[in-house]
Image 1 (tube, rainbow, N blue to C red):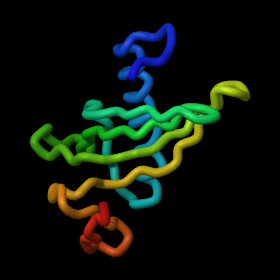
Image 2: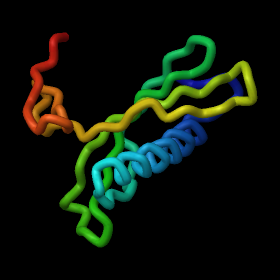
Image 3: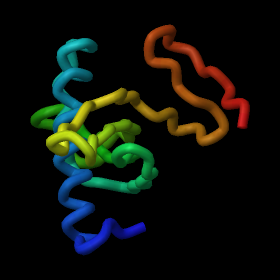
Length: 113
């Protein structure tokens, strides 16, 4: 889905910036040092603003690329008042696609979809 008057590359860049933005509070809360590597997927949902659901890869600082981990994050961009951006959540995605990894309790929680 392409936003009006914007190209897909501009949207990918914006979502990449959001991925970097989401990792900062994640690293602080979890005492980790992940750094953004690349955007994997993005999905935009429109309401009073734009909700971005993004998947991106990150790696521990000073680590090789084969140590990439996949993260999922949500960001809300208010299109009505000043185009303010609010990070919503960021989590590490389980390598097992049939479960959602619950980072807080360190156990898989099976997705009910």
